[in-house]
Length: 140
Image (cartoon, rainbow, N blue to C red):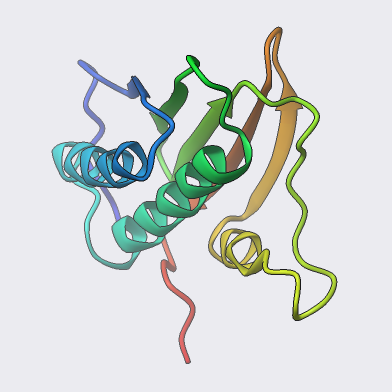
């Protein structure tokens, strides 16, 4: 899939309240931005799911009262980079080791992204993922 690059806005960033409503808004606004960039179909669905999972984790595990979380997306020639930053550096994400622990969302992120990771910030951390614009959702 080839998508046109918008030279006017190859990056997108916003801060949202660390609430379930903020996480839903992150996904909706990310979907709108992906459409603006011309990203559609399975690639857009994959990027939206990654945003939804990382935003949900930022709200559930990274919330600090009075601190927002930040969504950033960067549009590249063959990928979209998604970054979610929160204020809790000590809570680093990890996929579930046991079926009863939860953490399945990060397995989804690992499946949809070519790579993902965590990097420290001055305050908190950033969880990032690189989502390819080809391939999209895995086939069943």
